[in-house]
Amino acid sequence: MGSIEKYSTTNYIIRLHVKTNSKNQKIIKNGDNLTIFLKSKPVQNKANIELLSFIKNKLNISSNQIKIISGSRSRDKAIKITLKKNGDKEEIIKKLLI
Image 1 (cartoon, rainbow, N blue to C red):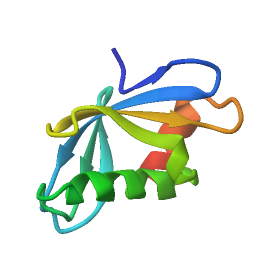
Image 2 (cartoon, one colour):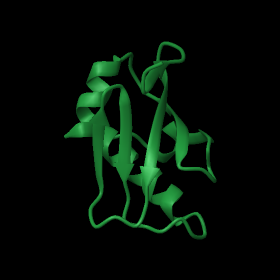
Image 3 (cartoon, rainbow, N blue to C red):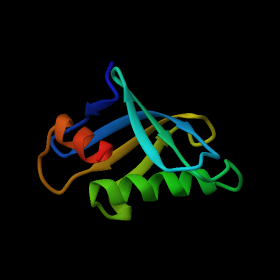
């Protein structure tokens, strides 16, 4: 199982591990896994809001194209993204890691 799975032609599921209370926002790839470092603490949904905003900006998508589908109270999360056009996993990973 990889960190990004194709769900349909324009929908993808991104599975990642979140580390909060970091000095910098960044995403690293460790094998097939993605780990994201966030500045916010996991209090009052702040880390989840920062996570969605960070990925949304990296992929240049709107708020209605991204959603946490599992793990909203966990460090391991699954996020569904909907692209406007057909893309591929490598392109998504490349944008996330820039």
